[in-house]
Image (cartoon, rainbow, N blue to C red; front, side):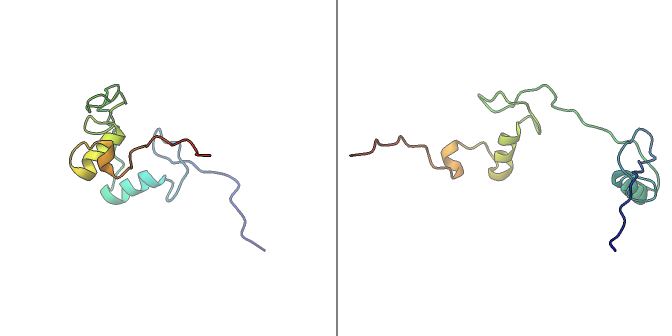
Length: 101
């Protein structure tokens, strides 16, 4: 016979948390907080760039990190600067020749 699965789900006992229990009546996030700090601390959500556009010229995407959208932030993180399409290793799109025949 195999193991029986639990048919009920316990939820985290931390105030305002509705995640499933992982250990000692707490979800993983609150359990780790308790282990590290000995108490449950309030978690803060940073909303720094909400509603702002990317700082890269010509980009209208929503800013995610350091004022840049995800795509431009990745360029700065990898290359240290904003890079043009051709420099990033993508071949430029060429016009297709019509089939000769």
